[in-house]
Length: 595
Image 1 (tube, one colour):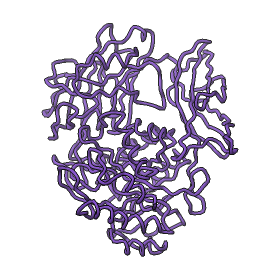
Image 2 (cartoon, helix red, strand yellow; image 1 turned 45 degrees about the vertical axis):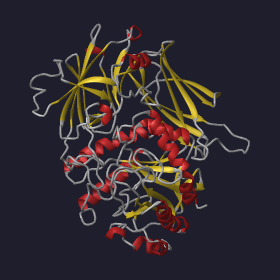
Image 3 (spheres, helix red, strand yellow; image 1 turned 30 degrees about the vertical axis):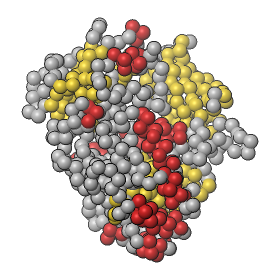
Image 4 (cartoon, helix red, strand yellow; image 1 turned 180 degrees about the vertical axis):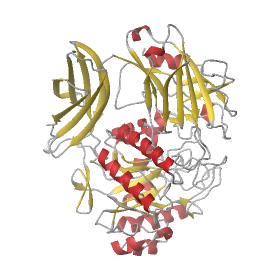
């Protein structure tokens, strides 16, 4: 049995256990899952540092990691304010890890984290949605080791990148229950002193090439280091390249000369999510030092002559807005199967993509989107007020998010800002306009492959796609509004300018990236939506009334319906909060696809 299986079996936690490998595009065979039962304590008086809780045990509570204390699955389910929380657990390393460097990984901790091993500070991190790790080898001891984490949140700070997390105790309106502390997996990995630290893969279908960057950690002067890259498709090895590594960042271009019976490459799309397997072996002085398994998709997303193209062909994006919340786990899915099921339900309703709204999603969701074939728009979790402190926070975290998710073929657009959140005066404030421009150009400088939306929904500055949010529910109004470009761009739904004055329309594709939002109560809780249906028949009629003019518009090249599921007090989902369809899936599919 593997180390992670042993850990799951020995857990005393009665709740669900997240045991799947957390980083599916950078997989090592050996790893030790640290999810499960931890000791836990609130530190409302902020005395933990003074009293050196990182050296002392005896926390009074238990918590099921990686579920936050606000969630049911944590075993605590307390939604009141506790902005400083502490975690503690012990672990022992398997004998097979001897002689290796030990890396400790966190998928995400909201918002600031400090980490101690055996009383020694090994890591600090700011940013509630992005991963971090530390080499803890020098802090380890024989036998049991003590791991302590302090998480600090700022529940009422509206300049904090927080997404849909509300700054009041009870969720309301469009805002939901907060997340504090560890909310994605924690794990250990043994690595060699010289090892592969990360990879960056850029497919080029026009040249049938993969541009591969491999980043090497611990490269020693004088060592003979070679890297072997093996590419396979459905178990058949297509190429093996081996080359000498002379610097910490090795760049190679590998030909992907793999054609099917029609003379085309096995490109990735929602209809045919073809993926290539990549194995990387690092050889140091003739001995295998590290091995990492990954995968990639050969696909291209582009804009030419005002048209959205997927793999050089016009492509209509049919997206659904997905908040990524779960009744018992909040931002954390109860299981890997729940993430996969959300994608299966999305596709069963006729959508080919999802806009993950105000959430940097769990990499396991992106893995299933890659495998099953679903377009994903990657979006930052925004703040609500502007300040120079906010600019630093959001920029640093967005850099980490783009780096983390760059390799996923499912990601086809970046959205650093949404609906002027954090830049509420962008229409007239030059400083806030410059911030939106900076985020746009920063994203383009990190990723030239994908289109970037500067401020999704309205008040856009420079942008690759012009996107509109419009919750109009009357069919004739929608049909007229989206009958030509001038009418669409001048309509100002919600009394908002689509483009900031001074930033002209430049023939970008136009997409309706929020619409619908029809509320329909089909569960035990009450809520709201942007318009309401009385019964199933009325719900279906209202769906047709908003979908048909949008689908039939010659102006719109894509859409995003609000939304996939009900969430807490919002009952405007196609599914209930517990993922039950409000009407048969096939009925929704026929409306989405226009049958």
